Image (cartoon, rainbow, N blue to C red; front, side, top):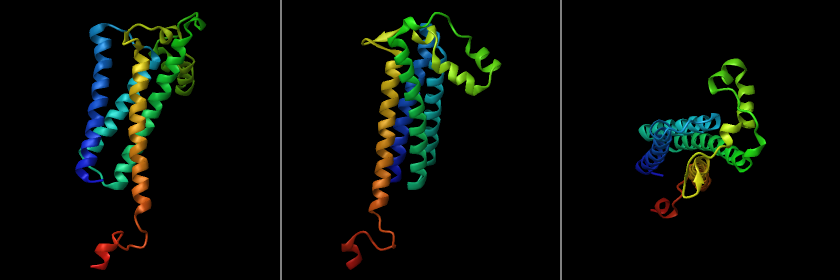
Length: 182
């Protein structure tokens, strides 16, 4: 993979993540939707994904660095996919919640972060509420589609790096017989 191709692909992924993050802020501050705890976790995964791809596009890494950046992007995408999937499952059965959970600040301020994350993934009435749809898909469903697309892109690039590395000879010989024979 050439340096220009790597940089442009990282920049396009960064742009997509920045647009998705911009849409989430637009829905919160302009439309007036209040994000729940799982929405904020998805936003954090999206911000992490955006930062990784921004650094990668500015850095312009070679093969190993590119592999590390794609691996970090897959990790952030996987975290966002799991969080969005959980919220989609919670929205499919909203009757299971009778009470609301404490606010995000109170949750992380009063208990260890591992317990707070577990409590967030258990869900509450705010996470199960569908407050906005586009083409009959809720915000977590759109988020899930985006994270799955980023996960597929990152996994494809990782597999491509592994494939290219496996095709390279280990002995230092040329992998092109025509050039080696000249």
